[in-house]
Length: 111
Image (cartoon, rainbow, N blue to C red; front, side, top):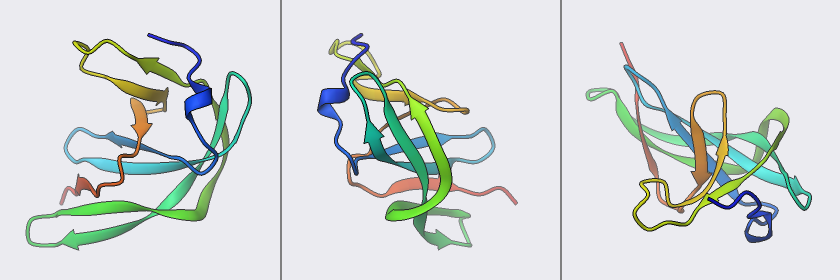
């Protein structure tokens, strides 16, 4: 695990945090600043496509539509190919977030 992958992160990059128990929540965070060892992210809105019959949908980030305060994070990177978490991550209140791959994220709701 590398502790300082900030040189691989750009201002404007999006992190996604997918979490939940009875439902899958998806939160997006946009990088707004960075230093040598940290990044600063802000929560952003998501654009959701919802299917009320299955209580599921897909979400994508709505870039620059900020809804939260700045949060300082220390990124880390898993590089081993045999590790289930390969890539750059940051810790959030509920689990960890990774760099968004550009594809819609699945989410679900609970009645």
